Image: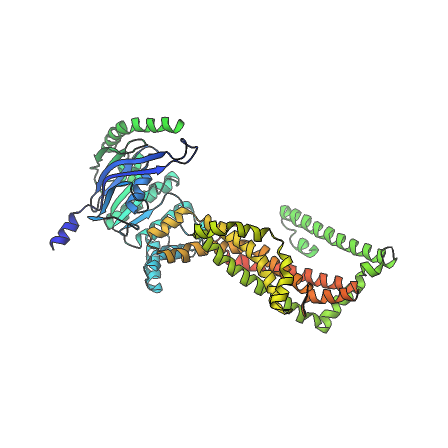
Length: 280
Length: 269
């Protein structure tokens, strides 16, 4: 019982002084053999059931942070705890990950794509099929089970990815600018749907984006990262906007604009720095 | 073709396309008939000696004769079996080796110069060795087909595995795939799709292996028919064999096209 309590109160994700270095690609930003420090001394906690967005200028190492949380990248130094247990070796079994780029298997239908994770777990095919059909319906794709990814629109493919991830019922959800490739309208729709799904079953969410409006309208907390290299959090903002929210409506409220103004003040400088670096 | 154009005459822009296509077909047929006529006239008037150039009507008669008596079917069957076996064995070996080499840098680095050397070698020259090893039956032809098919498919699979999207891989890992499951659900399907994309070339190669193998020494098959006819200076029968082989190759290619469309349904067209 005591153990259970301890696990309950442990943060879903805890970055502890995480630093990630990569060998530089030759020629691009210098000669080969040099070390590029993507993120440096990042300490950050995401509480159980909390929706946290991380914003920062493009190319600042946001995705690196997410890959560390997913267990796809080992930090060069520092540790990462998942529900109090240190993540060592292998991927993060508690987490679902939605990528920025296309991640569906082109040779599988929508249904087979959603089923694949259950298949990996060795679930009985008929049962997996039922669950997958249920989730496709939840993301609004009933009737599209037998379509191949290339037969779906960009928004629909994102929905399949969402279902593919959520059918496994992960306790943590990692999102890497999942909607950045979508048009503005589809994007708002997807954001609202994601919020509704989250509200129904509060998972811990780490949401990476460069879009400040998206971050504020969806999250409980927004973390601002500095420009790279050696990215680290420079400010945090509690977003105390009421829930449930409608992402397109909430953007017009006084409170939202005030928060946006405050955060943008901090972020602006970093964006300019990032811009200057990308031009060099 | 003319009929087709007549039945789609309601839509005027469509009609234009159809009739242009029909006109092309007519011109293609005319070209064929013209060449045949030229051949006929030149050999009939002995401008070209019939001993070396044969006669179109005799060639045609020979082909018809083969089909009427049914003699050709056995030989076609043998050649087809050799082709299919050569393709299946060659492609399977190439799939396994391609996957293995692409996923194991050591294996690929170690064998790289040898792969290059064997690929550069004119492999048809292996036919005599295969005849010695496997005799005059179908297996020496299959072996030749395998060596030809293997490299086409091998390089495709290797490239295919190397080009698997890292995002799809990471995604599969995040969904809980073990190493074996990754191989089965990501590497294998994407490698297989590369096998199928090289299907036309590789099936053609298997066919070449079978026919060349037969021609160099055999007791059955269309290549054997040609070899025999050549032995008695029967040029007409040699040409007839070539005609049959060409038709068989075209049919084979069409069949591959059908199979390809079936298997690569998930591909954007």
